[in-house]
Image 1 (cartoon, one colour):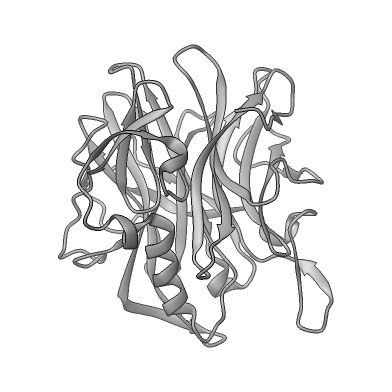
Image 2: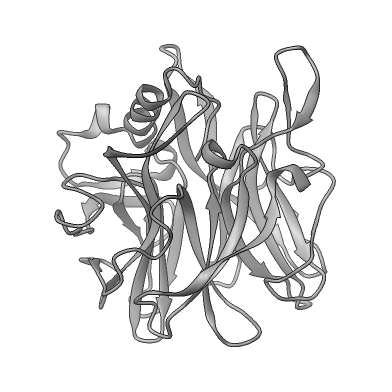
Amino acid sequence: MRTKRSSINHALLMFLFFLFSTGLFAQSNLKVQTAIPIDSIRLSDPFILADKNTQTYYMTGTGGKLWKSKDLKLWDGPFTVVETDPDSWMGKRPMIWAAEIHQFKDKYYYFATFTNREVIIDTVKGNKIERRASHILVSDSPEGPYKPMEDKTYLPADKPTLDGTFWIDKDNKPYMVYCYEWLQNWDGTIEKIQLKPDLSGSIGEGELLFKASDSPWSKERTEDGKIKPNKVTDGPFLFETQTGKLGMIWTSWVFGDYVQGVAYSESGTLDGPWIQEKDPITPPNFGHGMMFKTFEGKLLMALHSHRVGARGNYIRIPALLEVDDSKNKIIVSSKK
């Protein structure tokens, strides 16, 4: 979900990125549409829940809207499904990024990143850092409405965090895995924090899993032309292969290309150590992925393509790729 940004114009670029990448400039006045092909939808950070109870696919992502489909080809939407508390830290109209829907026990949980642009928590290297954090809402239905639970701050108020996802570890305890954004620490991390049994809040403090600089594949170039590790960590998603190998896909940059890589846990738990694969696993300018099984049992990766439009706006469209997880490492196909 992150892009390269000028420190001087960071706030403006983030606001424009949000509007363009979610299609709000084009869709702000549109009503719910039906039978829309997936490649006609503008959406960053797509996440698809295959809900067996309703035999329906539900897709959400940045922007906090919901799309639904019976066949993954034609979609109805966008629907408004999120209800936030205007008196909370999020403010009256928070940005919503990288939303996910997870079914857990008899509820549906909405993991998302909320940003209150009116609250500045820090200034680092000229960047004013807005109040931003991963948070969880709950509903009895995959179609919402998703509402806040008892915990008002799952993660520290003085740290910008994003892209929270869900995992039940080998200790049978629920966790949120999330990114601590590079804007403050200048070397983004991926961390975990334990959740309460009903996900209504967090327990303890976050723990480091790995840093952006641990990756051998993500790279950027300094002003004097030197090559160093890229500082961005983006979009973690946990999975197990059919052989029981625990892996995590996540996204960063290879110079100007938005790309996704993968790491595997040697211990089989969130504690790792996490061993990064040498090369990215998706084509250039495809990233922020997740994986799900279709109702027919096929494993697919949902992610978005990334390109820059004629006006300098970012164009991001959901895509589906086939995945082979039959061995210890996944193989992502370009076949849809």
